[in-house]
Length: 285
Image (cartoon, rainbow, N blue to C red; front, side, top):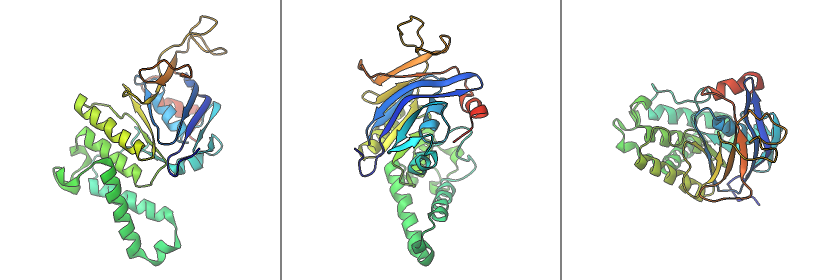
């Protein structure tokens, strides 16, 4: 049953194959609205492509998934409309030369442009006030206090700390009021303290009702975890799922710290250029 805001996410035998083989395969997932889902694995194990596929930005090669009751791949456009995406290399990175204010202003203008409501056209002052309120709410939810930055809102992205960049990217995604928030490299280049802060932030957003899907190197305790890059046992003893190439590594998933009989499985034969390689030959949805 859907919550008023968060989107349930499910997948069955979900897989994507690129020019170099399976990027991920055999993913089975059930996450209720407001879940914190961690996609854990080493770089190059298909984790970013799984995130893009579950947000309607890459077309799968096998199986299906549903986000907020919208079936993938058929309703990819509708899934994109209800999901907010943080920065992904080669997809929507922040411009390091832009200031924080410029990024926020650009996102607000894009929202107004694609809103297309008659009210916004007839009442531009009210629309600007609403945009300012949306910016303030997103910054508050992401825990980004502009006054603490070196040059406040005029600080360039290149001058931000890694955790501040993460907070800014989350704030930009939240400005669209998404039902699913997708974050790539949630714990990349963070100290232990910063990593704890990042997960506390993401868990708070999930607790507020928004489903969170986060790629990471190490999942936090208690998250619903999808692990890429490992192997699982199979009846034929090959270590690969039935009907797949035994040479293709697979991964087991489940709730962190438990042995769950409903463990999820995924696989990958990609390199560090997983996103670009998978896009070639498969295309984005």
